Image 1 (cartoon, rainbow, N blue to C red):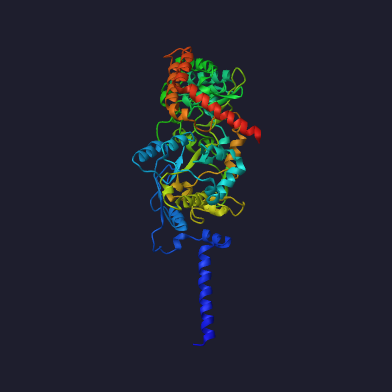
Image 2 (tube, helix red, strand yellow):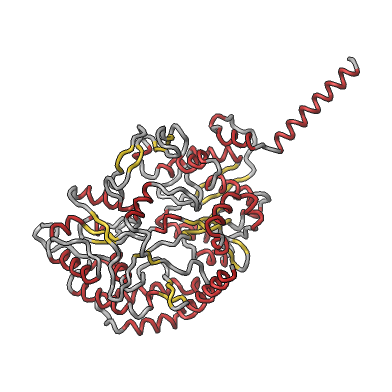
Length: 546
């Protein structure tokens, strides 16, 4: 062979090998976009086992099948095995704690209650997430959080080390609605009440005035969730999953201990004795199944409630949605309203404002913007590179910079599960049969990421704002846990509920409230309050320096 030809061939082969190696090591933006757009289902099976098996917990109301197509999509895209733990949302903490007690720690761990971050860190369940690693491998999540409010990243730190990525739910700016049976109000000739005095009159009428017209005295005014509207008329929220802290005179107080609660309890005790409050309020309004359903309201046992969130009370035509034909149609009744009208087709509901108390205060319970934390299991960091891979997947499925890919991560494959609107830019509609299936995203394995701020405000949220739900919310002003809160909160919440129920039912006089407060403080409440104010003062000092 000619020497020059041989040299040319060697040079060509070397160049090709070099190009292939460089292509494998560096992916351009255009190549990455193409990789994101292709359907992994079209690929042939890989010959080698993926280097990582990643266990993952998520928000789910139905189990995720092992072969869910969007799980497969992510597995192929990132060359991993993804194991979703099917922990029912209603029993999430109990099921998770059982797994942990058995020595099983998921690689990605959702901590549903922010106050539990410290608890799990103290148990040695969580791995520290180096901030530089988080910024490098989840840059879109970090940017979205910082653009919204950089303080939230500080909330995920314990002793200066980051353990929790904050999940911020922008829609929690909408407080819980106050809902009345509109047909009952009309039957009795009442308007929606605006003051505590008017509210009392309506509650007595709901219980004594035969609002459903069946000739029986089988209705009540309110149950447990409605009581928070009464407490709100005195500036506090009491029947909550956590202890609610409020601001007063530049310090934090525990709302359930405030002296004005004696006035609220006096109202409720009298109403209970007069048969205005559902005697089953002690066990709550929900009797199983989806936790935001008020069965007491659905079954026409009570005429008002403040249970759930705004989207659990959508009525026919509250706003419009796109159907599978890309047509704007009125939204249909959902959740509580749907269930109510299945039992009583003539039933209607109406929202009302928080009622104003004697001192001009009013409010209803709000859920904090800091909804939960995403954390990394302690065992995940024992495998080199696994933490980085988890963060890359989390970033991709939660805050993808490509709008189309982000919709895909949440709702499934375009053309199969959803499609873009041809008439409205940026809008899409769910395709049949998925638009008529509850929790279909769990069934296909999508929406495994975390909520991040910065999402556009949709028609549903515009409707919520038009109903005044951004006003007069009572929020927990302590968004983190303290050691004392971890140690004492469970017993303190039990003490709170026991004391309030005893007073409302008349087992104890209203004056026993003062004894309850003393016992509460002695049982760890004072230490909880002291640590809460130490945190609060630190936040105030940090804010003043900015």
